[in-house]
Length: 484
Image (tube, rainbow, N blue to C red; front, side, top):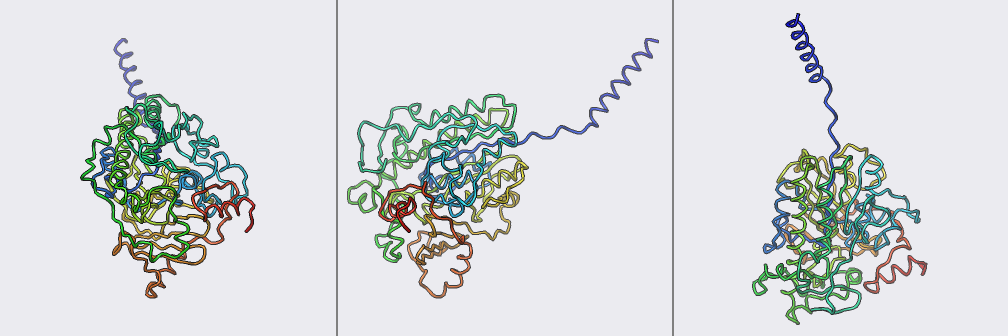
């Protein structure tokens, strides 16, 4: 009898095991999202080859695990409208946000053709926990962008007085300051992210990490300057006559703000210092990004997290005779973009033209949420599945109403509000020195690219502000009720 009971128990246990093994597996948990925004980061970082002296080992190791978009561009060459476009999924020509706006004025009803829903708000509606720190929108994370937000500490720290450059309406300056990395605001942002990745979360999360550097002022501790020998710094290409073939409206729009010009840097022997300072800030930003990536690798979320690293726009470091963003040229519009995660090809390169506007629908597509038909971007999943897939979608950048750059795999075409044009064949002219728009043999090409320019662009909303030069002062004056 005892043997029969044991046999019966064994049979029962075997049946139970068989039942368990035949039961449907639990559905996989939705992937987490680590969303790293880096301010004013151009294409000089190692994975994008813009400056061979750059020191960015952490971005390089992320690139080796990612699909790397080497022809990615912002939708506005200024922090405010670019970031608004990323988080709303709307072009400036749709939202009416062409310039800076206050964060909390983006979403409320403001006269725009559509009222956007932030990406983070949509994720929260689908069960995501949203948290972060640092600069995500222009002023941080206003408009209740995140459920848990650790703040944004401006662009300091600042020395008691400017170290190398002092001008109104710009924070441009450079020099070794402060003494330690833990005195930098970005260190606290990375600390927050590290802490968040060490916690147990009962829901999938969106973690936003806003890194300030290399935004001006170019102040970081001395150790980062020491990595770059000033005497051997390599300068970017420059042509003194570069503006001679530009239309007049281009000169008005791109008139230098109160930041150094290349001519000024040459005359004052400061150009190498500026490049050194920018490279030092990029290296420091890479260090903080590396701390966050290390924390992700050590966490329980390493295998189920989508990582997106992007910059809000590029930056000129003397090209085109300017040191700034806010142009419709390559140095200002091109941005680093890396996407990694479950099922995404590693160490893959995609050269198709894409935009930051595409991140919103791409993330929804990757995590299985329906994409609203109100978004202006398109999912990049076909390119993540196959980086060499056919892609007939030039990317556009808008700098003020009806001033638009169209970029495909070879050409940059710019058309301004008065119909003036620029056209650059980047296969022959990678520095965009030679504007060939007036050449009649390019008429068909220009017409093809112009078809991608949005029609009936929204008016500049009165919430916009920007005071760099007379052109933009007039744009804002009209938007705010000063006439048409």
